[in-house]
Image 1: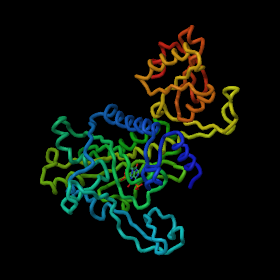
Image 2: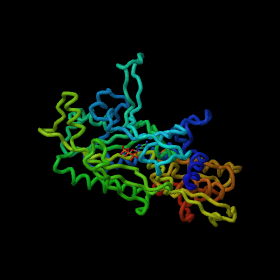
Image 3: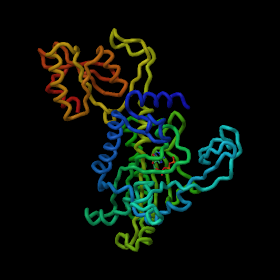
Image 4: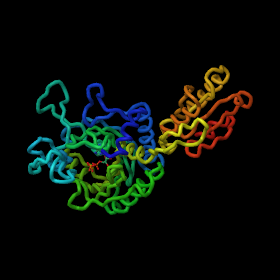
Length: 430
Ligand code: ATP
């Protein structure tokens, strides 16, 4: 395993970002739980995406459709046929199975010979209702966008939308991946953030370029360095069954350049197929709109943001005489993504007035932002703990605070400190 990824995995567990699922039973392969800080960070990612789509961009509305749908949806979309399948090879010696395109060389770890590839469908099957027979078979959705097509007419009618417009949705998707790996990068249950942009066919190319640029800017605005992001035009012969054109957005993970988002031109594949199979007219005026899709993974982007932000500082930072000279970890997360925005730290915990003042400050701020109150350990250690989880600011309440109604505001990156009046804190920190 890559050394940096290994460090991030153990850091994510130690500081409550990501845990292995079913840990006390030895874990459940490829499933992960988001801990107290992970859930806050993931929420920040999703909120930033939803805000960008439905508030900053024009003419995009939100949706939250069901995970379970009629199996007819998946027949019409082509997901039950070879179109949504990976090529699987099996080692004749150890019988482990691999996804052919992800196998770097043609021999597996035990050096056994591999079988000829065969198609393996990725849909996760389940039963709806009390009878487990063929009629009750349905599927956990493999992409959130099908729920958007199902509601195309409902949304147009309810919201009186005119082309071009978009529908944005965040939710869980499931794929029976042959080789889940690289921590939360490839799992069987994951969250997607997808936006379908419906437009006139002749405008599809223009909007493809527009959305690709918007999506790159979103990652930059949240702290991803330009040199760690690149695009990859998917060659025609590798396109998914529904796509006319696809560009992947790749991030430079510790284990190589990998996709975090796809921008796809789906043409009229989905609306025309659903129209045919359902006998419902999904045309707009007298034509099927074309669809530009932006399809991002919330878990994959969280991993990318963690990799980007994770820093180890050898010898520690020389802020206080208490500096341990040990290696220190700092998460250089953007303010938007940081799970905790502000830590409130009374200088001492055994002076009632100082603690009371610190509590007052905490109560003042907690309604506006995620705050943490921490009074245990030396002030230097408390700063270190906050730097580790990416908290942009620490507030220290000391004896002068009692006289002047102010606090010390410390900046995570510069370690600079300034005195700020308590009444000015909400405006300064928001
Ligand atoms: P890959 O080639 O890595 O399997 P894909 O091209 O099949 O990915 P899409 O169908 O385009 O992926 O899905 C859009 C996004 O959903 C991906 O860019 C990724 O962020 C996320 N995603 C897809 N599959 C997984 C998975 N198994 N685990 C985590 N995230 C995923």
